[in-house]
Amino acid sequence: MIGSLSEEEFLQKVLAFHGHAAPGVLLGGFLVEAARAHMKEGCLFDIISETRQCLPDAVQILTPCTVGNGWLVVQDLSLYSLVMYDKHTGEGCRAWVDPAKLGNFPLTYEWFYKLKAKKEQDGEALRREILDHGFEMISTRPVQMKPEALGHKSKGAIVTCPTCGEAYPVKFGDTCPLCREGRSYRYC
Amino acid sequence: MIGSLSEEEFLQKVLAFHGHAAPGVLLGGFLVEAARAHMKEGCLFDIISETRQCLPDAVQILTPCTVGNGWLVVQDLSLYSLVMYDKHTGEGCRAWVDPAKLGNFPLTYEWFYKLKAKKEQDGEALRREILDHGFEMISTRPVQMKPEALGHKSKGAIVTCPTCGEAYPVKFGDTCPLCREGRSYRYC
Image (tube, rainbow over all chains, first blue to last red; front, side):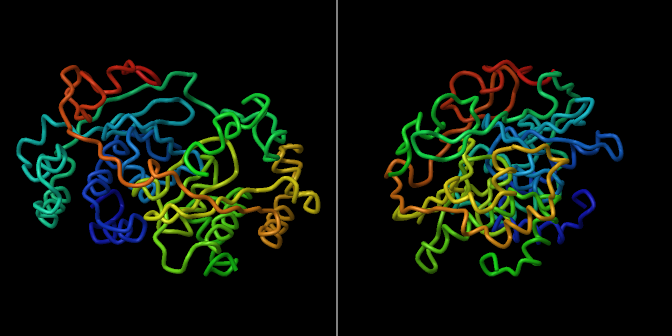
């Protein structure tokens, strides 16, 4: 079981949403449930994903938290970890893939540390190892969010950019962030 | 129709994923489809969402692009716009909510510029206005991604942080990003 889902149900949701049964999403599912096990029943929680790779999709598949509804924030530190916390009290749990626990799981270790080219990995066996032992690869600890990290941050007043005519929060200054950054920063 | 979905199907998917029929997700659906109309049939595309509010969920509901699979990148400029582009050629389309086109849509204008408190808005009428006229509120233009913005960026080699024992990409330096930033940056 991954939370309330059978393995088969979880895999189907991963395929439908993420597009393929990526080892990172599978392991991410165990991170979500390892953290959730420490939350009070019925608590409304927010989540920080400390990587933008794979893990945000496990969160979006298994919880009501999405990037667009703001209950999931991606703080990309390139760490395979997440923080789940009560959005009112800030009490919660951090869960991470613990390298010290990967010794007995060679396929996961090789994949996690990128020691083998993808085409040399046995993907099926790797997924099996994660699905059978995901919880054993994870450590957790309690966290307390700082008061300034809680609550809704308002965008403030919205105005029209005098340069491009698009709408933006006035707190960014006299022009919109894209005009300030140079509108051709990544495309022209 | 929103892409291949009926209005009812789209609304059901929005409720299931985002949690409520937020005007921003509805309008976001029209941004997605306005851009997609300019893409070649069958082309594999990536998307940049230029806000993290609501719009990423419209993308994740209507396309194969998710935050976790990397085909959706959130570049939070606080602009209600997206860029959709062919991941091989970089040709694509930018779509944005155009304030110059909102004059005939007073409920959307008031909501978009936050001129009325939420409890004074007529949410049902606002959603109706967006669902009936979403495409008329949007402008698009062709874009060409810069070569450096295309292709997969590798994380490079993964090592174990000597301070905390977690795994991180060595390109970040001698310790992991969280130890460098101070592990109590948002929680303790």
